[in-house]
Image (cartoon, rainbow, N blue to C red; front, side, top):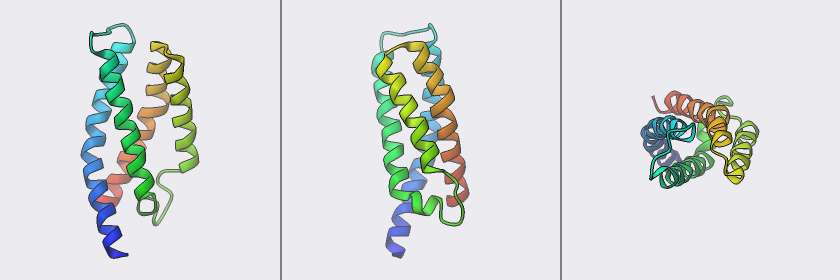
Length: 121
């Protein structure tokens, strides 16, 4: 059991740094989606979505540790945000996607980052 906890802590340590980088990337893509598209915006968007998916996977593998003493990240709330974001991705409309990044994804990533800091530090 201790080995699993150590692995989860290690995963959260990696996620902590990645979460900060992903958040910065999302702020950039929001600008691009709001009218400053670049040649590589679609590829950048794809990489960001892959990063979000990876963070969700790590969360799913570490949620017991994250929520060990109290609920830091509510899975139902997270699912609502992720579903709303998925709908925005499916709509393929830049403004809807930018809005969803700001309304759904950034608050989730911030909450996850805060939870990670609380658990790891």
